[in-house]
Amino acid sequence: MNRLKELRKEKKLTQQELADYMQVTRRGYQKWENGESNIKPKKAEELAKIFNVSVAYLLGYTDDSKMYDDELTVEVEGNLLSVSEKRFEEEYRNNLLKNFVRFLSDENLFLSNNEIVDIIQLLFSLSTNHGNSLKSKTFQDIFINKNHKYHKQLEKEYSFIFGDEFARDDTEKALHGYILEETRTKEKSEKLLETLKNAYGERDYSDFL
Image (spheres, rainbow, N blue to C red):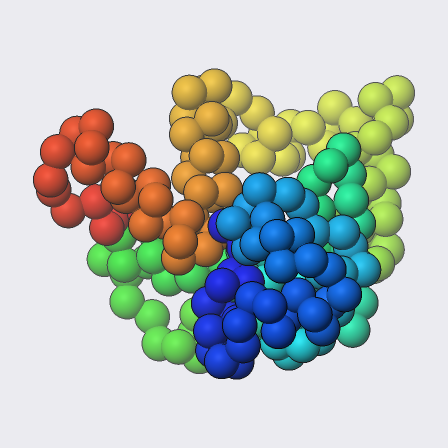
């Protein structure tokens, strides 16, 4: 799923030219481009700099080509991963906005742009798992300590979140996680759409994705 081929063509470079620049054989480079072998972290970072994109974008993990100064590229069990707290936070906020707007639209609730942003900011300020406020620290101390005298009270007051009444069942969890993972990029979304059409025939799956 890496974007080496399209990025190389945008730069009007041949495989041999890029292979020479990276000091690898043409066949070695072809294996990267075709996904036959994993790119080593340092080589991935060099390639990202050549194309002025993030390593995560180069590898096809995200549609965000923006470079982040805290991006770290590591290899775990043969898989190349790109980690950036700044990118994660930005993507998290963007996804929160997208999902909240979709929720409003699905439920026929109409709010202005400013009202939507204000509500999201309010949610962040009220949430106990964001920031380093005294409220957040106190919540965490009580939550992780089941012997704390206020632990049962906390579970009761947050039962909508931590209880089973509104929780997804195992099938819903698996499906929800799969959709989130398989729609992180345009290419993955198109692949999932093709799978659905092959399995269930032609229909409008846009709401599903």
